Length: 253
Image (cartoon, rainbow, N blue to C red; front, side):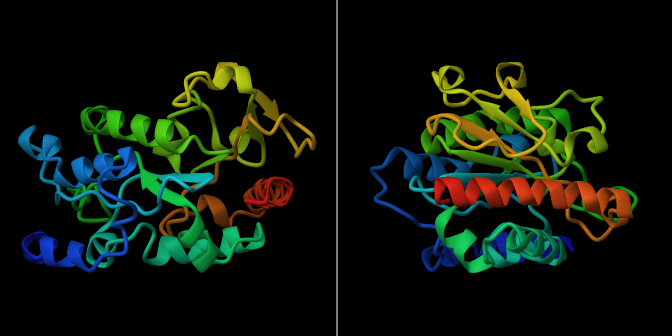
């Protein structure tokens, strides 16, 4: 696995030249940020055995921001987020909310709490969960992405992304299946993660001010997670997807 990641890193420049993730003119603030994210080596310098090179997709015209945990090795190889099995499940969910995979990837922005592949876990089972220090090192990039995109809807996917907004001790069953709405006054700082300034919405509420922002979390779509397979949790996911579908329709997302 280390040989694969090394080869990917060594060929990164040629990959990027043909990569669709060069979006707008380098003079735009988001393009400048994306260049900095790709070049970042903070975690590597801090001693973490990551595969450097940020993985993300989208441009400043996006109105939906989807935040995952961290890219996996197949995401590094393909140079796009949610590329493997977890992506298939995620886009099955999003299809139920009215987005095809091609449409969502074309129109919206996908990023993660940490931008680089963190490597395999010490147990050898699955990928390593980025440490709090790594998350903190990457946090300014995420805050800047949020500020520049100023999305109408945020979809945090999985525990690390959900904890950006929700209390660390909150249970998925109390979170999934509902949303939150940030009124326009709460978005004077567009990079607002403070859920105390939002209003919980247990179902879609039409007619809210269009300058506000919706937040609708989803569980991690990894096949290794049993949580989404339980019947009671499938119902919660279906409720979340119904809220997303209603938001998409009302706001033409």
